[in-house]
Image 1 (cartoon, rainbow, N blue to C red):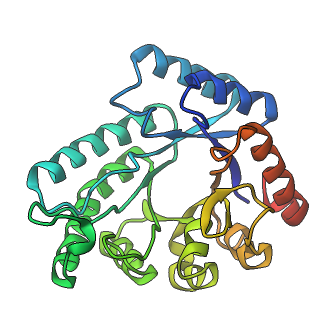
Image 2 (cartoon, helix red, strand yellow):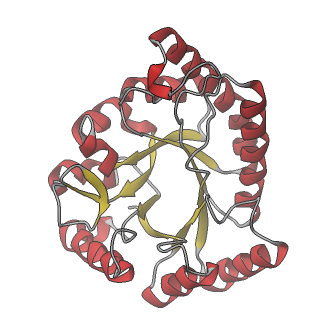
Length: 278
């Protein structure tokens, strides 16, 4: 029974407490911090104290979507090491807030000699996959010690991305050999790529976290119920059998009525899945 979460930011001009207040007022029990703006590198001590107070008073869990542009597969030692140090800081921060999930993008190929990520050969890509595995092996024990789950998100299976299939994602998780490492399945990314059913079939019990959104004309992160998302196909992801704890509504940023998009999306999910969605 996943607990629905909202993102900590819809519009760039929002203050930190805007979505926190919205979550409290609308009865959401989880917020996923947007790592571009709300992370260990940007949040002050006062910000963190504020979030801890909200967590204690209102029972809200603060998870984190780590930096969307992260490059844990980078061939550049300095980039790889800086990413590692930053990710470790953000694991510690999330744990200090009582959070349970940190989402990691496996990212794109990053090689100094390439003009663009999509110019990389398959040999270069496989080396990038090994770099991601090495990264996750390093941070997995830290997450385990802190009681936080690292959830690696499925991105797009397009040239330039490190992971080009659900099998690639499964291999990174299996290589970590750690119960605190799993997958975030973004259903919008699935719909733009190889589908939800194949994600469920390949990733199965590795799935620990969800990003929920709809797709219209090949564009994701739209209001649920307005695009091509098939609720029956998604049903296994929210079933009690899989045991996913949190599902974040990644919707609203494409609309001037972002809060309304979130509430309507929640209503569609509740009408379809009932008590399977909290």
